[in-house]
Image (cartoon, rainbow over all chains, first blue to last red; front, side, top):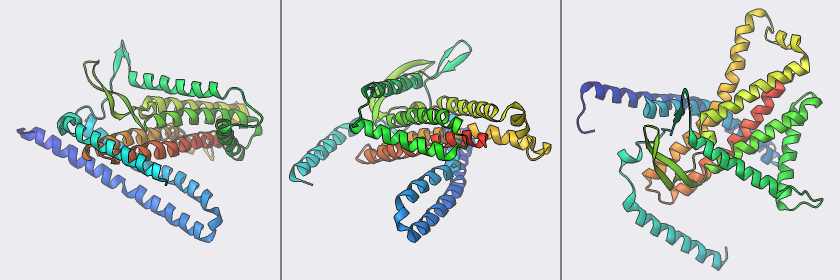
Length: 84
Length: 273
């Protein structure tokens, strides 16, 4: 990476900015969603501590579904970095 | 923790640190280490190409499942440990399917499909949770380098082809069940609910199911493998990799296998109602 012409530099710049934006913006949705899930699970656990096991399992399942959009943007970021 | 355990742990940790210090000399520079990251070994035969790593590792998974199945073939009235784990797993899944699927005629077929998918996906996710034979470095379709214990196994589920096969299979099976349960006419009519204008929406909604179903598993497992590789390189393979394998391999792998098979049940039961 010692010397490159302008076209190569712009290409690399676009790749880096694109991957960063894809991952950064894509992580907002799952973050908010998983926060909501966690908050409501905490509420439910505080109300009914004897249901803790069942609630934790379902919370993890809901987390896995909620984070799928974040995973898609992670995939896109990897595609931009490694396959473009 | 007893005194014996403490000595054992100290010896293991010392050996680990020694191995790390020795190996530190052989860690490749950044440009070389990340050169083949995210690339796959592809062999093309005529007009179609395939990924041999997926086929090799999928056969390993099949052999492991076959070995396990043969070892619990003779079921006893008083179960041993292996059999009781298996019975608990099957029972949990059967109850889950019974609660979800409305038609009792389709409980057993749905259970068989979901359980098969879960066993395969979970075993192949577990394969990605510890280091083994990795295929790195190739030119023009020819393999040039095989790594031993340099990275985790490449799971069959880290290849989109495997996941898309399962997702499309579930898509076809769910519609076949719907035709069988409701009859062809009622199934055809279900596309035009609530009225004919909504047909394209229903079509897109149905076609998006297998795509999101397969991409979720693929992204989690493949992304986890790549993240593990990058993090282990950044920390120079010191101590952290064990926890990364545990998190991305065992924890995420189990949860995603569970989510994948629960969605199988949900998609099939959604077509039956």
